[in-house]
Every structure is written in structure tokens, then in C-alpha cells.
Length: 184
Image (cartoon, rainbow, N blue to C red; front, side, top):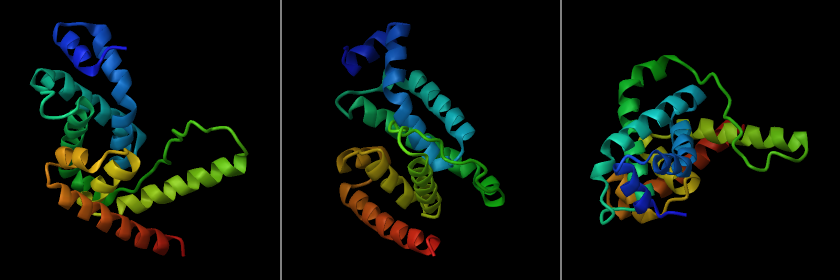
């Protein structure tokens, strides 16, 4: 398999198969990030496409010395989501989440009651995450749901690593309080 840097270089030379390989490698992660922020399948799909349009348009600015490609893509996605959040703030205040979280769990087998319980837990988690401030929510999502390390998150959010750790800690504590209140 080609390294991501090789794929980027091939993309810059117009190689469509290299672009497809980069898309396949990163679409799931970007979609999940978009979904965690929006809570809506259609919005997450649209935002994922918009993120990759930005990635494609700015591919020539990627600098391997600055960050891993996945971190660079995550930063573009995060910035796009922040812009989207600012643009749609008033819409969110007047509408409720209409859709259930899609099941993206590879362990789809098993007992139906277990699948229902797992879906309910994901929905509860998602609802709890939506109640966090955007700063805390994005730090928790990047760490606990996207499995990024502190240094990567600091790069994506463009904040010091200590601030990342603080936001994750505060976000987890607040999420636990929110989930406890919701469980009553």
C-alpha cells in the first residue's frame, strides 16, 4: 500500500486512483466527526463532502513536516465544522434532532435486544454530547471517539496541549453529570 505522502503527491499530479485511496482511508473518520457534531445523517454527509472538497482544493498546502496527513484532514474538518456551527447557530436553537444515530458498529450481529440497548446508549451519549459547550465537546470527541492523542488534538484545535487535557477532563466530567441527569 502506498504511503499517504505518496498518495498526496500522486493526487497533485492528477492521479484519480490516489485521490480515491485517500478518500477511502479518511471518509469514515471525517463522517463520524461530522455526525458527532451535527447529529444528523444528511448534514454529516453534506459536511463530509464539503470537507473533502476543501481538502482537495488545499492539498498542495499540505506540509508533512507540520503534521500527519490524518491530523491535517482532521484540522480542516474541525475548522469547517466550527464555521458551520457559527452559520447555523440560530437554526439549531429552533429545531430538534429528528434522526437517530446511524449504527456504524461493525458488531451488528448478536441478539436484537443487545442491538437496541447499544443503539439507546449511543443515542444517550450523543444527546449528552450535544449539551456540552462546543470547546469541550470537540475535545472529548477527538480524544474519546476519534482516538486522537493529545498532541494531534492540540494541532487540530490550534491550542496548547495542556489546554487540550483540561478541556478533555472538564468535558468528561460535565458529560458524566449530564448523562446522570438524563438517566433519571
